[in-house]
Amino acid sequence: MSDVIIRGARIYGEGEPQDVLISGGEIRGIGAGLDAPEGAEVIEAAGQVLLPGFVDLHTHLREPGREDTETIESGSAAGALGGYTAVFAMANTSPVADSVVITDHVWRRGQEVGLVDVHPVGAVTVGLEGKQLAEMATMASGIGKVKMFSDDGHCVYDPLIMRRALEYSSALGVLIAQHAEEPRLTVGAVAHEGPTAARLGLAGWPRAAEESIVARDALLARDAGARVHICHASTAGTVELMKWARGQGISITAEVTPHHLLLDDSRLETYDAVNRVNPPLREQSDIAALRQGLADGVIDCVATDHAPHAEQDKCCEFSAARPGMLGLETALAIVAQTMVETGLLDWRGVARVMSERPAEIVGLSDQGRPIAVGEPANLTLVDPDREWTVRAPELASIAQNSPFDAMTFGARVTTTLLRGRVTVGDGQVRP
Image 1 (cartoon, one colour):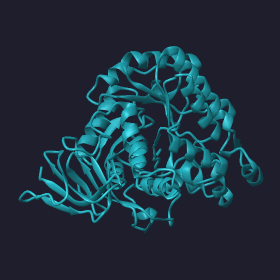
Image 2 (cartoon, one colour):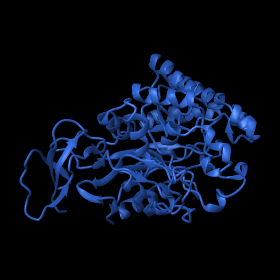
Image 3 (cartoon, one colour):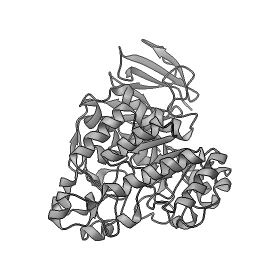
Image 4 (cartoon, rainbow, N blue to C red):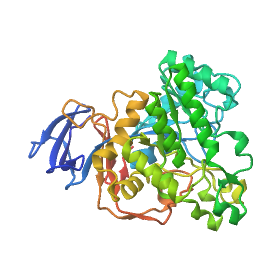
């Protein structure tokens, strides 16, 4: 592993530019005018913002089963380009990641690719069917060391099954991440229940479908003495419920997606199925509450819910389309636009919501660490003034279902380092 020196980076976007010397996968020196060891790679940051590498708690990599839409290799490339050094691959693959055979495969394949650490997420229930708990202990003790379990794509809707899962997770020291959706309230639903859906003739998805599960699971976690994590929070009511639960001392965390920070249900006017997502795009009032909740720490972190889909699964009638959007490569740009440019977060705050807090939630000891001497060199450089336009066919993912296609943003990741090795340099992947 060669030495690397980053010249002239603004650490957390603060103070004067500093040099950062990296050797043996760790940060060895920070200061102005550091000497570069012979043979070291020099990265000219020119005042760019240096942050800890991002951690995504919610990624769909589709392998095994749907390698026509994404693979661990292509998804890892997308993650590295987005500034990520660790991602958590959801369990709704084919076959489902409800056994140690699958979760260990995902971990091994991620390590073979070597662009990001791909942590497998195990299913809570066998086959994501919500009826029988999966072998969580076996997956947690496997090579993949599963730290988080989720039936994402499906809600663990049976309260007794969810209670047992929480009790079991507490004993194992792992985390249950809930897809909060009361399925009896969303039968046939494809869009946020409101004036836009009514006018367009689209079946409405009420906020209560999410909020009722958030409230229920907060109470179940309280009684089980367990932790619960809420996936893709999307409503103002969920933010209020999180405040209430925290006030009760309940161990509950939540994530918000970039698309729920930026896009609202007015996007549905064209009936373009690229905008269909689960939970659906909400209203501007929800976006405002989610942004403020993220700034205040009520919503803990940003997670992409990166969900690649084949063209035939999106280029169809809106109600028949598969829900989901690409998110890894555009996440930082959206957070910069919605949170930094609006003054809700500074760059240290971005580090908190995209790196430090997600790593803390799942207990990653080597990610989301301070930028300091002796710490692992999992880092990302962001040019806060690099304007770029998203071109879906040029993204690293195999699928192209990005709702941000043709949008222009004002910040972009330029360099990513995983344990001191440059995985992305000047916006290009280094295998």
